[in-house]
Length: 443
Image 1 (spheres, one colour):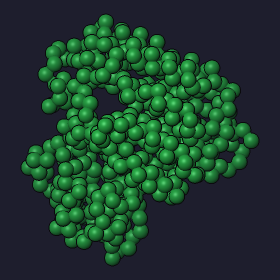
Image 2 (cartoon, one colour):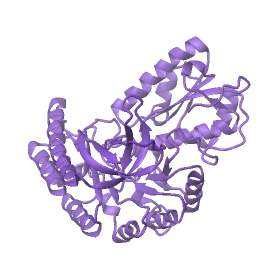
Image 3 (cartoon, one colour):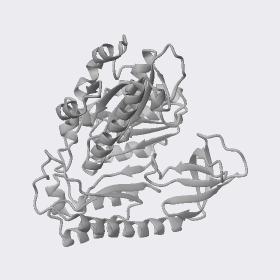
Image 4 (cartoon, one colour):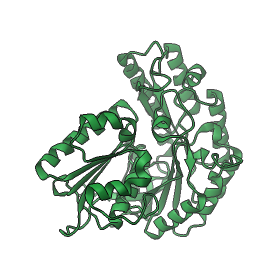
């Protein structure tokens, strides 16, 4: 996030770590500061304030956050700026962080977001009239795409996951507020909305009567003019019912992109993980989706090496991906997290075994992916152009089947004409390299 250099204003450098849900939090924090007259710079050495919004989900994320904090402590020692740390790590390890990194001027855990104005006034001297979450976000990504966060927290209590411990129980944001925010984003130039939450399909179920309101939100968003694509992430399989499928089919702007995080394909493992539903129920759902939609995109995530996982359990997961034939698949080795139900489960799977299984899984998935793409060579697809390579002159974008942030690869596009970034163009698929697709613009 970069703004002007008015020396009369405080200058801030924001670092947002972790997932897209955390990014929305960072944008809301930046919006709050912006309303108070703070401007933003693109180098920490130029900042009066460095703000780090952290992730504390798994070990690698915690390490990245700690390393980043110490890097910025080094900057503070040279520039004498203020340093604030917020987010999941601050929520999970507040007392430890305060004791071990006293150079940080303020740690703001998630539970204090609504009252952070008092902290900002005491530490920075800022008199902030707005409130967190009630002011316009200052977005940091491409102007044509924005995440719309439907709620926070989680009630699923998966055995490996610390999110409920960090973020608390699931709570949905009011539908009218989301529609208003979406309209504002579109008025500001957004063409693609990506709906996110820890569990988007649970949206509304914390209200009296436990209504499933995701479908209602889709019908409302469909009515917003100038909005081109609506994409939904994090859809739990047991919450995808027929009314939701009907809504996705009825709303032409909603991409039939089904991001269904299964985590395993073996029922014993699913039960140990405290996941709802079975592998067969997921297979049946995949078949239902493929019957009802002409060109659905199906994606899942899997965890390899969960405690007690045997060779037979893993082989069953391999059979599961062969049966479902996922278009996209992300897989991760198990991360042992304190205070989760799986932390003391025995036996833990050795790291070398986990890595070997992960390599086998992803090799097989690439075969499935390659077979899918080869069948589509020569087809014309709509692509959102997002950047241009200054050396090659090629454009990079995403099709309907590719979520933001590179998780599904890029679409590399050749064109004889100049294409404004943020444009939707028709592209003929001519090849692929790894998970990146290659094509040329069709007039």
